[in-house]
Length: 400
Image (cartoon, rainbow, N blue to C red; front, side, top):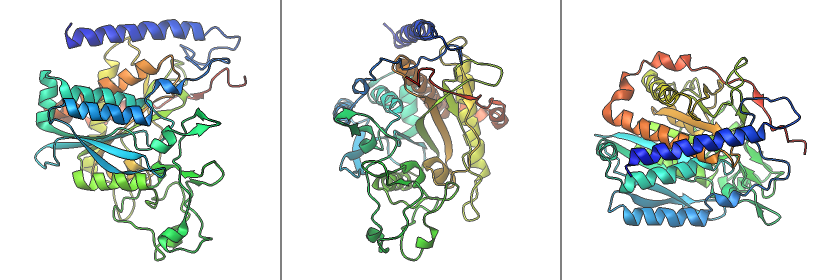
């Protein structure tokens, strides 16, 4: 069976699954919030996070892919998490200035796992496929992938059961930075959760050489629209990878809650994208060329997925306007990289396969478009025509 036929069969199966589960989940006494209304976690349903890759399973898969890649992929240790889990970067090519360089990360929030599953599938294709499109991608692009940045959050347990969470596992230790023990922690630190931890995706700064010290401690605790402080080992690991690669494009894979497509269209939104997450700072203005390429990439993926017609890949909208220079996307775009956010709808088990494949298709087409140059033919103004997301909606079973 050819690869295209195989993917078509997979997509058709996923579509049928979505149709039937959407119909089943819509049978509630509550008025539907969206069409399809869900699929949601049911009142008596036990969420089986174990169906997704554990840290150990991920590391095993990465080693197997490297071994079978015949030199295409190099797996390197980039650092360690607060709990001592390794953080890996998979490299397809060297940091060659003659190639378009792409850095992708997933699961900076431990409770947002589907991007990792998509990236493992992509790595398998890049490492082993002889499809002409893949070979052209490898010839024209350098692609580095961090498949799971927050292994602490991914492996978080509550009462012995796996319950992945947003934050890492790390305690604020101001003495580590030469500060008094009563120094206020960064605003994105959560001391009241067990164990304490940080939202790693607020720990970045456009100053890639920033080191917290008594000389700049007056910036603490900061606020959401300010840069972060690089106090987590995970953020520093990504920062160091970024400095080594100096990517032209940075892509970040996330999850979001559920939305309708618009105020008047109550179709279920499956994906939100964004090309701009900050206006810049006085010291680090936003490069217009980086912003233009960001818009081209996001518009390219939006239109490509929507052109698939009545597929489950519809319902794509623009992420709400934000100003977050302390995020990975914000920090890196202020250093000249084009950016793209994949913010898929929250995992719900019944639709996980579709959400994973949506990211796989979008990322592969992004690689192809950058390799053959078609991304650069897109009018950046098309990005501004992507509709903003509609109202947030919630699980109708949430009160159970």
